[in-house]
Length: 87
Image 1 (cartoon, one colour):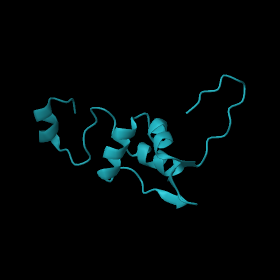
Image 2 (tube, rainbow, N blue to C red; image 1 turned 30 degrees about the horizontal axis):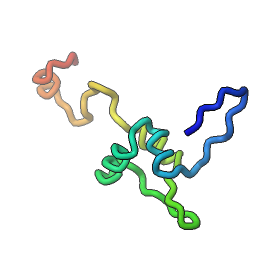
Image 3 (cartoon, helix red, strand yellow; image 1 turned 180 degrees about the horizontal axis):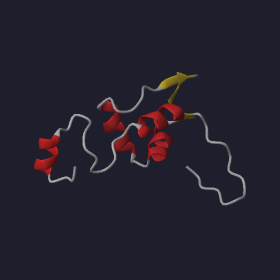
Image 4 (cartoon, rainbow, N blue to C red; image 1 turned 180 degrees about the vertical axis):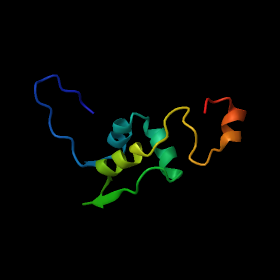
């Protein structure tokens, strides 16, 4: 992905190829593939023989990722206490 230093950046395409999608998420293509195999990456679309990942679907997936050191949704007071987190 190119970084432009001019005053106007070209619009980000809606469909991203594998390397672009990985770069967009800030991970390597191999980590992207690993996450895809785990079912974490939204399903790709096919357009004229090209595999494309929907940028908006990637945004939604990213918004749902947990924050670092955040308690899991199913944590109870014992999980938090045993981990040493503050309630």
